[in-house]
Image (cartoon, rainbow, N blue to C red; front, side, top):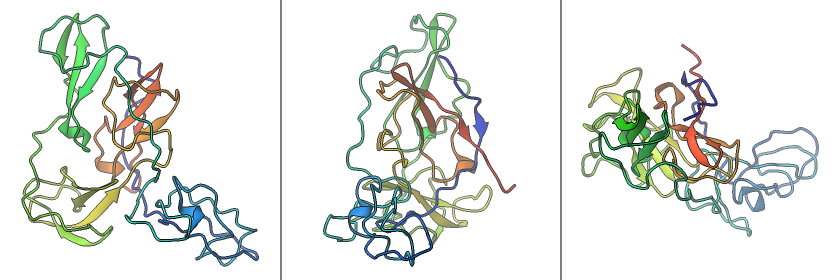
Length: 261
């Protein structure tokens, strides 16, 4: 596996997107109405200014992080923190990694090739295999934990970004999953189950070339140079929650910077 970036340890805290409103706060005489067409797939180009934009030239409002609102100005059906788009690529067949999870000690050919398997939105809950010295081994750097399910009744009908919560018995690393959104109850530093926390949510990355969900390492991709990050909090992000499209396959991305500490 070729690593294009140095893995760094993390802090990209995704902010709330406008969910159908504009993402710029320009000055000047602008129009109204960013909640309509400006909130379409991954933002698109804004209508005639923004509803909260008391200025701006005639509607150069790029609602890049808005939720997918209707053409008629109707509000989005779901909140969105990150990018919103209905037309996201689906990872294709693996060009080099086995399609199914290999067995320990099975022969492999590409030394250093890293492949992952699973469908959890949390990278730490997936399985990682490394081709080392001609055989498949569990990747020693994957930091995989035993992921539990959140307790029945723990997840609210819709988690509210920034609202108070109590860390579940499953721990901070297991999210409540909603359509297009994953929400974590995170506390300060290293919270234990039962500690107070706040909901931190994220949707698909803003780049519409990124799949809606975290692709497995080794799955096929079609837009070289695309980097996608799937974490609500970069400071606690798993090192493999950042992926990069290189030579037709998703590999480990550049990771995250952690600021403020």
